[in-house]
Image (cartoon, rainbow, N blue to C red; front, side, top):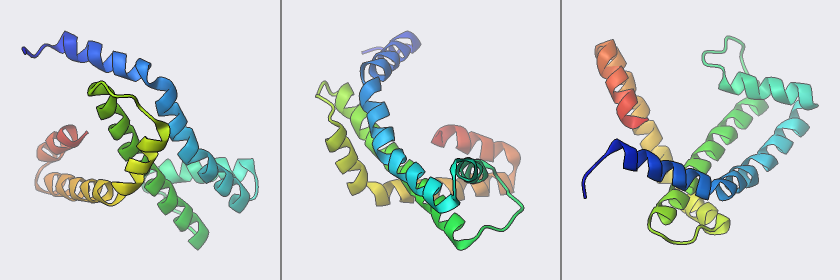
Length: 145
């Protein structure tokens, strides 16, 4: 089988749009309880939006309280869970098998620690690459993306 950019893009688009409802359901099942928890603990929707923006902001200068730190940690864990579940769903689709939201989430929970490990190792390697020179860090970021 020959490699061609057109076939890769076509297959990627087919998988994405073919499993779009399942992928959105996975993200909603994981993030809706998290967003409700953030809203309840932050004291309202404006504070919850601010907390989510602060979580995404790199290098925030303000110190976070304990609850904000826990919510940030929980948000990161939820994103790793979604990454594992979506990866499993995509591989199942590429194998020609049916994709189940429950099976994907179950596999995401089972593989959560390895996904976190890969994220930590890639962050360390990218950091080393940026420390040595900027270009190796950029190359490693592109490799791990």
